[in-house]
Image (cartoon, rainbow, N blue to C red):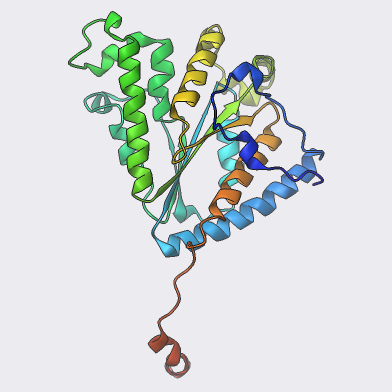
Length: 293
C-alpha cells in the first residue's frame, strides 16, 4: 500500500462537528491490496493478543458504534478472525431484557467486560444509553428509575448525569488495567440508503431488513446530533473515540485494525513471561525424562 496513514488523525481530541468529518478515506490502493494489508495487520494483532494473554495484566475493550448498516458485524468478523478464539469475546447488546432492566443500565456491560489477557468487543455498547434512549426518551421509563416519573424528567440534567456516569465507568476500568478503544463508524446517509436497498435487492440479505430501519432513518439528523455530543463529551485520554470513515468497508476495517495495532505496540511491557532460571538450567533433564518415557 502506497499510503502510510497516521491513525491519530482519526482520534477525537478536540470538539468536532460530524458534518465536517469525511465518511470516505482514500488509501491509494485497490480492494485486494487493502485486504492483503489488513491480513498482515491482523496477524500482528494476533501475536500481541497471544503475548497479552500470557502476560495477563491488561484487558482490551473495543467499543463499536454506528448507524444501521455501518458495517459493524462484518468488520468484527474480518478484523478478529485471525486472533485466537479463546482470547476474544464478542458481545452484541440488544434491547435490555427484563432482568437487565431490574439493574442499572451499566450492569450488563460490567458483566461483559473482558478479563485480563483478553480482548472484549462490544457490538453496540453502553453508549446506546445516551443515543437510542436520547432519541427515544420514552424508553427510559422502562428502567423504572426512582427520580423519573414522566418523560419530562428525562431532561438535560438527566443526560449530564448519565454522561458523567459513563466517563466514571470508563475511567475506573482504565485505571484497573483495561485498554479502551471506542470506534464510531461514520457512515453517510447516501451510503446507508445504498446498503438498505441492497438488503432489499439481494435475497440472501432480505432477513437483515426491517421496517424499523426506515423509521430510524427518518431520525437521521437527531441521531447525528446525539452522536456528536456523545463523542465530544466522552472522548478522553483514557478512553478515546475514533471517527472511522465507513462508506468503504475494507478501508474502515483496515483503519480500525491499524489503530489497534499502532496503539498496542506502544505498550512495551506486554510480553510473554520468561521461564525462570532454575527451569532453564534443567531443560536437558526434562527433555531426557520425556524421551525416556
